[in-house]
Amino acid sequence: MERMRRVYRGTASELFGEDALPIDKMSRHVGFYRLAKESVPLLRDEEKEILDAYSAGVNAYLDNISFIGGKTCSANLLPPELVVLGVKQLDPWEPADTLALARLMGLQLSWNWSLDLTREAVRQHGLGEFVEDLLPFTAANLLDLVTIMDEDDLKRQGHWADETL
Image (cartoon, rainbow, N blue to C red; front, side, top):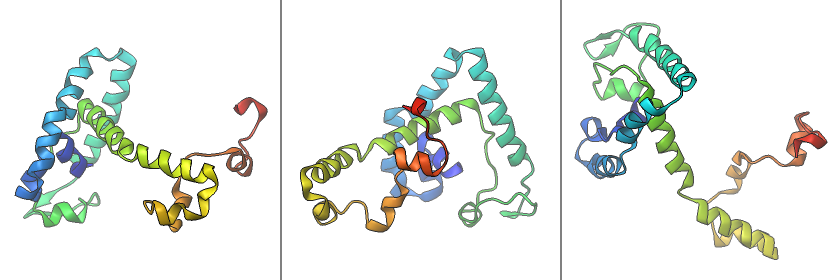
């Protein structure tokens, strides 16, 4: 979460150096975090309560991490990459962080939409056997990771009913 927070806040270069500056510039230009902060006051009370509760849970975990000499010494450990990078403090999580993370994830999940449509068009035109050769974006061993469920998937998991549609 911290790595992603650095990306959407535009502060990745603080950890990863000059090579991360283009990412920081893009994130600040898009305004993931700025827009999230502006959105919080516009939320309904129930939505704010949910985000506050989530933030409190994340912060309860963060509060139990001890930083001594750049190493953690509690049951709640930092991810190894943060220890290696010498992180000695983490900012508290806030509702805007959750909203900004959702915005960043939305962008990341939409990057390959045109390739997904092209792959499906190739399959539907009877060229399914060639799709991996023509568009090798998804290796055969990753096809099982597709998250879209069809009727057979729902039936296997016992969630199928005529009302499902």
